[in-house]
Image 1: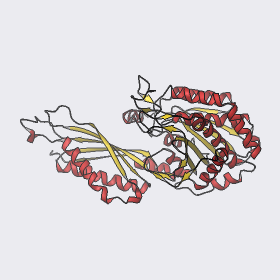
Image 2 (image 1 turned 135 degrees about the vertical axis):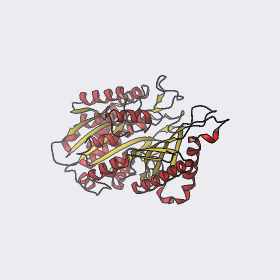
Image 3 (image 1 turned 90 degrees about the vertical axis):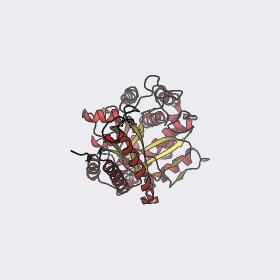
Image 4 (image 1 turned 120 degrees about the horizontal axis):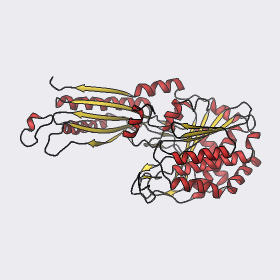
Length: 436
C-alpha cells in the first residue's frame, strides 16, 4: 500500500500547477448556490478528460463521476463544494452579484480535482475493491432564501441545501462512506455540528395613521418585537448540551414611518445539536409567534423550511485521516472531539452514511467576511487533495476490509426515515386572531 500512496502523492505533486489553476479559476469566478455554472462545467470537463463516466445537472449544477474497480466492495464518495457567498465588500467579489469565495469552497473543488487526477493517473483502482465516486456539490451555503423559495415554487428544487437535494435525487443511494475536506485555519475534525430549520414569518395587522389614529391600527411590528422578546426569554428553557442557537432578521419592517405597520416579515434560523432538540426549540418558537399575534389581535403565517441535519462524525474515519496527515506533515497537530455551533449540509449525509468533515489549512481572516483568504495553497489545495486520495486508498485497498467495516456501522437514520423527517419538517402554519 505504501508504494501506491507514494505514487499518488507524486502524481499530485506533478499536477500541482494544474490543481492550483483550478482553484484560482473558481476563486476568481465566484457563483452563488445553484448558479455555479462555470465551476460545474470546469469539474465536469475534468472528469470527462479523465475518462470517467459522468452524471451532470444534478440538483441543477452538481455532477458526479465514478471510478469503478469492477470488484465488489464499498462505494466511497469524495466530495467538494463550489458555491460562493454574497460578500460584496470582499476584494475578490463579483461586481455584479456580490458573490465571493469567503468560505474557501474553491479549495474543496481543487482538492477534489487533485484527488481525481491522482487516483486515475496512478491506476490505483487496479489495487482497490469497490468504487470511488467524485461528487461536486452545489449550494452548501444556505443563503438567498427568496431565490430558493422561488425555485421551490417553480418545482425546480425541493430543498435549499445542495446535499439534501442530491440525497432526494438518489445521488447517494449507492454510497457507503463520504468524505470532505474544508479549508481551515488549522487541522481538525469536528465531532459534530448543529443542524437547523428556517422559518419565514409574516405578521399581519391593520394599517392606520400613526399620529392621528394609532389606536385604530394593529401594529405588526409590535407583534414581531414581542415575538423576538418572547423567544429571547426562552433561553433558560434550553439544555446547554443541546447547543441551541436562534437568530434572525426583520426582512421587512413596514411601509412608511407614519403608518402603523400592517405587514412585517422575519426570517429565523433555529439551530441545535440533535433533530429532537431542533424540533423542541422550533415548537417553542412557534408558540412565541402565536402568542405575539394573539396579544395584539393580529395574524401570523409561518413557513418552515428544512435546513440541515446535525452532523455526526465517524471516529474511525477521523483516525484514518489523522494517520495520513501525520505521514504527510508530521509536524502538524490534528485535533478532534469539538462541537461547532455552525451548520453544514454534510450533516444530512452523516445521518445516513458514515462521514468525515475535516479541516485542513490554511486561510487567514474570518469565514464569511471580507478578510477571508487562502494563504497557503499547498496545504489548502495540494495537501487536501492528497489526503482525500490516501483516505480512499486506505478504505478500499485489497479486499476493502477497512471500508467494509466502516460501511457496516449503524447510522442515525435510514434513508427512508431521513426522507420522511425532511418532508415532515417543511410545513406551513397560521394563527389569525383578527376580529372577523
